[in-house]
Image 1 (tube, rainbow, N blue to C red):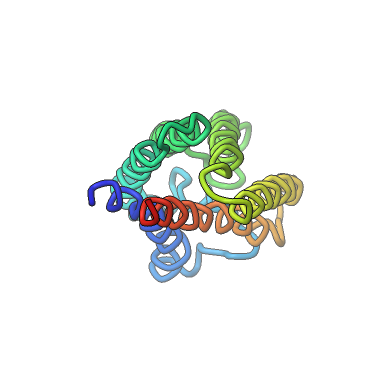
Image 2: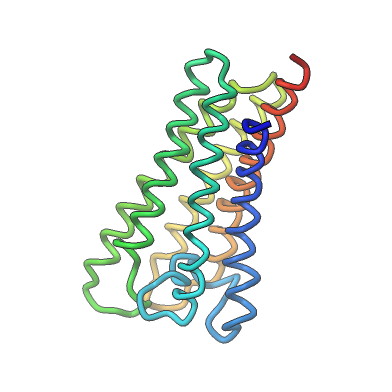
Length: 206
């Protein structure tokens, strides 16, 4: 029962995060929120009107991520790659927490921002943790789950690269950058739910 509850924390964390960035932030500050042309990191930027409310939601979000990583570890059943995937999820959670507190980006247009460079470095580390978790976590299920996981990892990498390309005109207009980044984020967040379902199903069969 405890393991199953920990596995449920994965999809719960995804729902909380996506609701925070695209429902709560949008309703509170529609004048600042832009699905199409704004990076999600700008919602957490220092000085942004959305940062305070979103940061309040990061504490339960990261607790859910850590609990889910523990559930994946307990569900590994001796499979080393699944255990490493659990560690990668925990690494993502830790990096995301530290990055949000100590390496947020500045508001768009801040000249010669050192914070933006630190934020980019932390984002690359987080992405590495996430992609590694998906590739190794692909072995937590059967063939169809493996194919789905690897395709999801490929989509996430492709749209992360597209996001970086579309963000190059900053601080100028960046049409499409928000949509590209959200494909990456939603695909990765959705994978957590499918991983939880796959592990839950395995234990149910056993």
